[in-house]
Amino acid sequence: MLFPDYRPRRLRQNEQFRRMIRETKLSVDDLVLPLFSIGGKNVKNPIPSMPGQYQLSIDNIVKTAKRARDLGIPGIILFGIPDKKDPMGAQAHAKNGIVQKTIKTLKDKVPDLAVITDVCLCQYTDHGHCGIVRDGVIDNDTSLEILAKTALSHAQAGADMVAPSDMMDGRVAEIRVTLDESGFSAVPIMSYAAKYCSAFYGPFREAAESSPKFGDRRTYQMDPANSQEAIREATMDVEEGADIIMVKPALPYLDIIARIREEIDLPIAAYNVSGEYSMVKAGEKMGWLDGKRTMMEMLISIKRAGADMILTYFAIEAAEELG
Image (cartoon, rainbow, N blue to C red; front, side, top):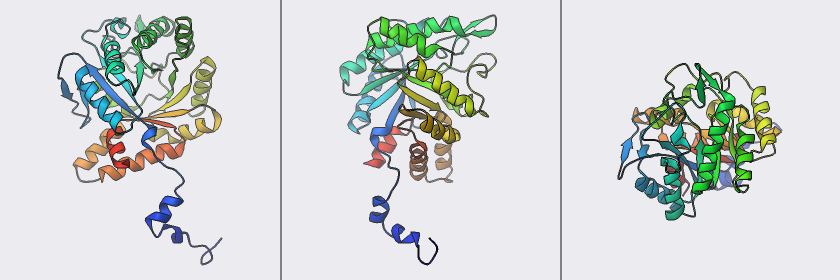
């Protein structure tokens, strides 16, 4: 088909035509809102590197969750900032830990909103790593029991889904067995399967107070240069019992989302991470970007690549824009 016989602009000339032939459609149903829970009452601590985002006490988490629910957002994912930290991350699985208390309150106050929980130790350990440290090294197998206990504590508190983000080998299987043996076989696992060691996490680490105190996370998070390894990671997590496979970050890894979409027959989630959010907010503040248009273009690109779910700090703004 060559010009003048084929004129693509014919179907671009008005909004009605553009809507009718649009290949990818973003819906509020695709969105998951991340929230940071902290102790106290009426707390709303601004996160400087993430304008418009806050550390929230449980009462304010409930208010934000209700707003998200009213906009049609189907779920949130919770991160906790504990009152105290220790080498073993004991508050991660404490019965009255910050996330556990937040879950219980949310399921009481906003029962029709899905509550997903991040399962990791970095926010709870005094060294800031996602696993237990032995002699200066992250001990994979020792960490598995703690991670499984954390996931179980979330399920016992009422979480609808758990999402291990630690990148320890074998953690999905350990969590699945623990949940099943404890009577929580119906609780699904959304695995951070292809989680890259990314510079885009910087603002999140300020928000969650989870920066490592020594070294970095290259021994457990993936090398940004690797693509085939992502397929191996995703396949392994499927075999271990994951119900949803996640790619994190989203924008620099759209090719990975697309590859996993082609090769894995499970729902795919993508995390539109803090650095991606903050870049848009900074560009908007400087007058270099149209914030809303950039936000929507970002999210549609993630959806177009193959994601079924998008975890994004833009969730409320995007839901308002989608109407």
